[in-house]
Length: 372
Ligand code: G6P
Image 1 (cartoon, rainbow, N blue to C red):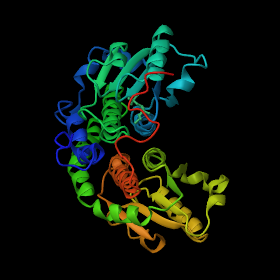
Image 2: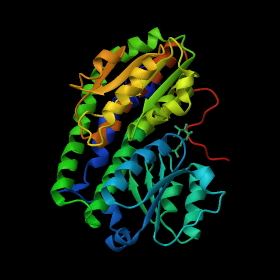
Image 3: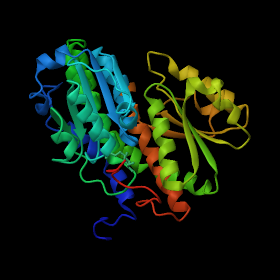
């Protein structure tokens, strides 16, 4: 009903507006003295966190993209190998697991059948299981050794938005706690990252306040038949998420690519007028990925692409190369996905609205896929 939407045009609009709170509420109660302590992990025990030699993240849909962001962060900080796999692929290939494998499932509903069956399989194989879940008391957390709840609040729109940023936040917190326990990051380094993470909710409020420009762009593009998304490092899963949202909501062909893969195929798709969103890494990133992505932009621009860059405030180097620049506030490079994804959530929603579609209930999709 209109009352449930709290004055918003759709549940999705309301839920995007709640993305800052979803991040803030997921952090709340899990930082002590500037360091991460997730009380729910006490049951698992520090010995287990120290002894695991592998983390395997399993999920479906948007939750799997959150897991991909988590992989970059957890592996970098805690120096433990992390893989991400779609639950339905995982469960049918007899994966090799051991008691030192920690299987982390990510699920908004906690009821996705493939993810649940993957967790059960992992337990049978003797692996430890941790659930990152948004729904209290759902089946997947009940089947897991431990659960870290995301506190995004109930999500109604079929396409996941606020749960996604909360899932990424939970992965960051888990990665930081793992790094503390395994002593792979110094306490000061953890404190600096935690302080930056705590700034993200306010930064997200700024991003949301500038959503009008996105709405304009989306309305101009209502007739577009194909949109590409490029990203690199933690921006890569965000490119995949941006593309998924357009498919789900606006029924437009969209694909996300790793920017480094451009010359291995996707660049052949570029013809004059092709719209390409590019998530530009921070110029402050130590890996100097910024220059590489700017050069990707030049390559596609030379072939007629219309480039919409999502770039950090103060990044002037990108300006001469993009047709449009959407600004996000300065954050630690690892936390940029939280800021960069919000304009893409807006874009998917606005383009669907411009086409007169039901953004909360896209055709053929269910909020929770509890069958195979
Ligand atoms: C469905 C929903 C998606 C969601 C996916 C995984 O496909 O439409 O929005 O990302 O399921 O759901 P889960 O509840 O496991 O996160």
